[in-house]
Length: 288
Image (tube, rainbow, N blue to C red; front, side, top):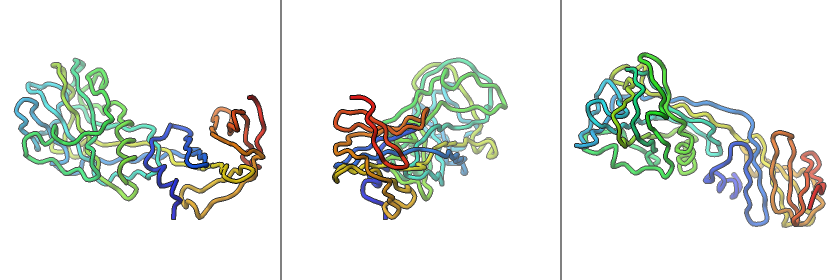
């Protein structure tokens, strides 16, 4: 069984490299090491769709997904099933890969969101079935300039969707596979970026690519005992793998942080900055 504070960490957004968490006399630090990439494509016709911005009419079988204005103003929705992301993962990059169906460099405005639910449904013919879905707080600019210039029959990508995927992973459990819907909401302008849909080419259907890192080590300092002690936990097995590294020789450690450029673990003890030996736990005062 995982410890309570490890469960709480799953709901927090993490920085890219090292994470500091303070709770009831415990200071915790994740150190991230290995990187993993997961890819899921649109697998069925109704898992990508367009919605007319003016009439809210849905198009579930278009051969193309049109971001911007191609005669009509459209919203776009894409649903990716079976996405597997561990709960403790930190998203380092996330984007959608497209096969361009036309060349275009003109500008338009729009925004990407995720659908804020653990179980997004496939798209249907109900008017407004893209624009009326509940959206994530996180959003990513999806203007023409964010897509960049596209050339026909080339592989192109969306802007970085990391904030959206990180929010969803903090809110819902994808560790055993789950579904994610990405919504693009038209803002204005006459430019466009046109991509193959599942119905246009199943082999070139949109693909969600997520890159993430997992904790390699977890350090924490307990200052509820005297003196403070440095401990480590295997994030995969949780409380069953706690190892005591050693005493810091301090009594009021308030924060710890890791400097990746030097491999140094720092600690703050009663307003004193110092280093912590990750082999012995010993704290060495370096400045006040």
